[in-house]
Image (cartoon, rainbow, N blue to C red; front, top):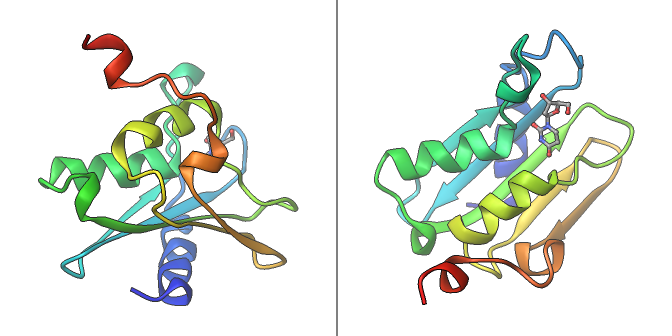
Length: 133
Ligand code: THU
């Protein structure tokens, strides 16, 4: 799927953010080789540690529906903030295991945008091969 279309879907997903505490809205859209799209929005909770980020919700939705990293061709993450929503540390760790290193990650906030990948976002990764030895 084209970057622009995926980013637009992420902005639509952002409308579903449940963020009464931070009032910071994030949306994510993940596309697969077979043309499917999984959306995510951040969902907060009064027990703050139970909040979940938009990009994790999107990638977990894809995995929950049987997709795996080799099926994922792009991920858009957007916010309504003044700066680009760079994925938080927990999301970088999750993405480092669940998407390919070079899969494009598109960041946008309507004012600026950039394309990156998890290899650049998370150097010196701790992963499955460190645990399963
Ligand atoms: N958040 C995301 O959904 N993704 C990010 O990349 C950064 C942070 C959410 C979590 C929380 O609901 C709110 O933004 C403020 O941290």
